Image (cartoon, rainbow, N blue to C red; front, side, top):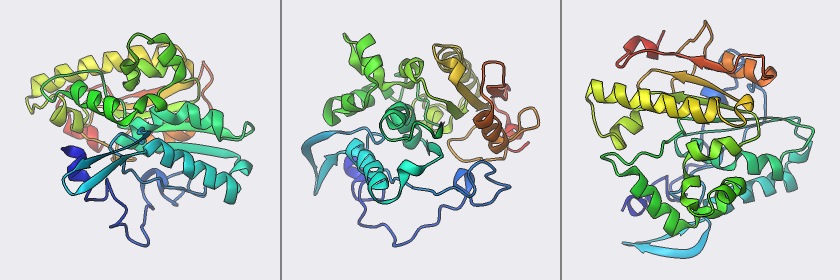
Length: 295
């Protein structure tokens, strides 16, 4: 299984972690030019190892070959914030940014509201910034819904789901596994970094390299994203840098929309996201668009 395979590597075990790691790049950079919003902020990196986008909350373990799998990503996340409050003066924070890419991006959609309501000082400025974490409720060749169903049934991810979403979907709580069904309940400032032609999705969900199929996927994806995240309930609190580069995560400051790169858009949205301010930086181009990745 995927979880069994990952259990022996850095995505499933801390045994191979180095004593020190360097995360000084992208939106964690200490360069003011690269990261104008948060270059001089304290930074905490929460490693991913539960196979459920930091959403697992199951005391039961599962055997996979020689490994015993633990599904407790939500507990790890909570423990980090409790440690920060107990020993690192997190209660004195004036500004808090929560971000992550891919599975980390899923976790931001999943936990941003809970983190704000539970741990963030009420006087602090707050922004959630999921990167490449908006995965649609689409089965396709990659059987993406089926894979998520296994995670849902085996890892007790319901514990990580938004309670308002669960209430609205009482007859089918699994719906709250997908960002498109959750974002209308996310009532905190959120700025998404997302490709319309996400490279992981075209490879692992669509499972196609056909230009016409990827373009059609991107058009449908854009419609879902706009309808739910930008124009749906609580959309007035949401913003996005929505690009047409074929990538998954990364590409920080490599693209420009209306003359602004991701870091400039993030900084502006953080400071100004009232209803009349700009919320969307939309690079609308047909697939494939090579120049979109470095314009």
